[in-house]
Length: 288
Image 1 (cartoon, rainbow, N blue to C red):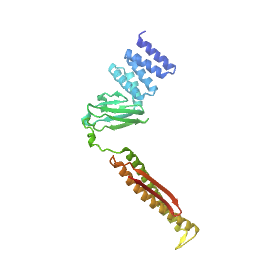
Image 2: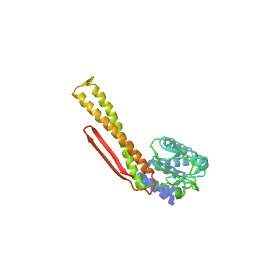
Image 3: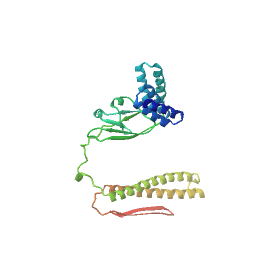
Image 4: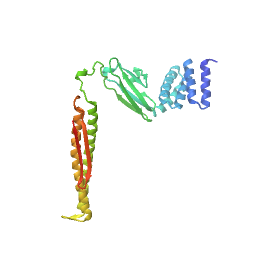
C-alpha cells in the first residue's frame, strides 16, 4: 500500500475513534504525499469538525474548483453545499491599503497573504488575529483584530505607512523634561482634577439640600429639619468653593511642573486638608 493510502486509512480510523485532530494530521499528510481530490474533501470536512472553519472553507473552495475541472458533479455539489453553510458563520476581514502602499506585504498571524486575495474579504476563524503591513523603508503597521463568532465583513483601513527617513529631530532640539518634576506634576494635576470633581459634587449637593430645606421653611422661619438641611447646604457650599479653588491651583501647578525645563531646584510640596464645623479647608504649598 502506498504511503499516501496508509496515511489516509489512518485518518479514517482516527475519525472512527473520535480523534479529530489526529485525523486531520493524517489526512494532511496523505494529501501532501498525493494531492487527491477525495483526500482534500476529507481534509476539509475534518477541519470543519475541528472548528477550523476558515481553513475548511478555503479547502472546500479548492476542492470544488478541482471537481468542476474534472467534471465530478457530485463532488461539486457536496463542496458547494458546505461552502454555502460555512459562509453563514465565518467572519471575514477586508484589508484596504492606500495607493502608495499597494506593494506592501500583508501578514495575518505571521503568515504572508497572497496579494491577489487582498481584493476580496479574507475568511478567518473567530478570535484574536494579528495584522501586520510592511514595506521597504517604511514603518510597519500592526493591529490586533478581534473577530466575533458571527458572519460578516470587518474593514481594516490601513493608513499610509510612515517613511523611515522622517526621523526624530536632533537631540539638542528635542524638548527635555525633568522626569521627577513631570511625575510630581502628574500627581499634583491629578489631585487637582479630583478636587474639581469634588467641588462639582458638593455644588450639586448644595442645590439639592437647599431645595429640600425650602419645603421645611416659611419665609424666615424653619423647623428643626429645615434648619439642619440649611446648615448642611452651607457646609456643602463651603466645601465646593474650597475644592474648586484648591483644584484649580493644583492643576495650574501640575501643568507647570510637567512643562518646566530641567536644571532647576527639585520641587518640594506640602499639602494640608481637614474639616471644621463651618465646612473644611484644603491647602497646597511648596518650593519650586
